[in-house]
Length: 469
Image (cartoon, rainbow, N blue to C red; front, side, top):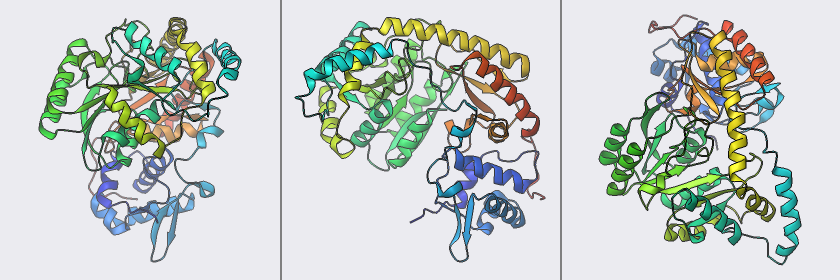
């Protein structure tokens, strides 16, 4: 059964959808890009033309023409009496995977595999015979790997025992397990704004009511606003990336970590600190883990960014009683973590310093090269050079990043527009570009962006209430 998108919700989520193009084409473009990047789900029914025209304060003729354009491009199916349903080409469901067909895919902030990865898998295969008597369904994680993860935190100044660690299928799986365990539908969840898109997806799928704490590349977190939101709304959970935040690259100061941890503990809000980017330091230096400031803070991490995205190994580090609850809930979601990948991770954690140094060297070169290219070709864009992480968070001025994303596809480049990282259409003037690709690809990508910017158009500052087709 298809879900109905209300006119009010669609008008809110569209954000600043106008462009230099005719109004009906601009509206169709925005709906299409929201479908492609997953903000709208295929199979969902759009509001009636009259309802949407009222919500957007535009003519019904404009909405009708936009719907007709989407039908012509096979992104909308309309049946008399049943309304208009979003669709993806060739009958696909979920976010469309068009990026696989493009020569350049900058939609993922991920790096090539650590050079020592083959040796890690060789070690795993050599050790595997010793574990074949194991039934293979490992819900908690190998004791050796949990000990290695615990040692990793202890070495960073956060004493940890193996009983405080649970091994997962990556950090996203860890977040889903924690949300399933700690959250009830309808409760509030504090998030950073902007933030990791799949965290938004996870919380919305769980029926959460999201509270946004602003964060910027230059200024960091608005901790005062975060404190007010926690005090007034008592969210059950809070999600943050305190180190090289995705997408801004900002890092939270020690003082701000203390302030946020203090108010969360007092109000009973469980903070989930995502540390998947914590080891991606370029020139900042180490900071204490967020969990150092409160025993109730839960940490999730993985080897995906440091070693390889294809190594689906992550973990949860938290209080023992919480780990027991998560373990009891896990069979409803999956039946354990593969042993070969766990054995390879044991080897890799022994080389954490080598992996960190190797990744830092690569990231520094990519960051500086991409920043120089963008400064040369887009001097009007504003960017803050991050101390670490994998991407630049760029203010595109008056260029719509959604329009730019559509235009870039015609140039063979996949990018993610700013609103994918926020709520209610926010960050239309922002764009995330990873610097983890080769210099040749980065240079070619900037060239594709430059060509796309010539047709993407700007966001008008003032618009009439009634649009003309």
